[in-house]
Length: 151
Image (cartoon, rainbow, N blue to C red; front, side, top):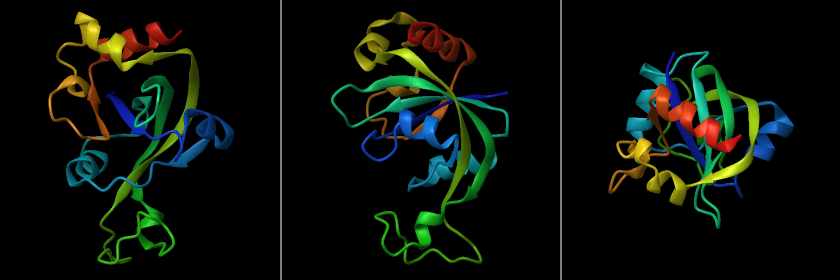
C-alpha cells in the first residue's frame, strides 16, 4: 500500500463535495509527472490525504481511498471545461485521474504552517522549495501523523 497527498482548490472541489458525492474521478490534473504517477504507481486501495490549496486556509482536511487509478479524465474532452485539451485524443487520452472515495473529514484543518513547523515533516515533498505538484507520495509515518493531527 502506498500513501498520497492530493491537492484541490476547495472552490473547485472540496472535501465536503467529495463527502456529498462519495466517489469522484480526480480530474483536471495537467502535469505529466503526476499523470504518470497515477498511471504507473498508484493502486486501488492506496490511501490519500485531501489537501485544500490556493485558499485562505491551506492544509490537510481529510482522508480518501483510491478506488481505481488512471481512469480517463473526462474534462479533457469537454469544450466547456477549463481543463479541455484540444490535442487529447479519445483513442489515446492524454490525461488520467484516479477515482477516489471519501473516508473522513478531519475534525480540524492541519494547516501548512503547522506542517512546516513540525520536524516530522521536514523531508515531505510538500515543503520542498519549488514544489508545484498537485499529487505526490507521502510516507506511512507522515500520513499517520497528519491523520492524528487532524483528529
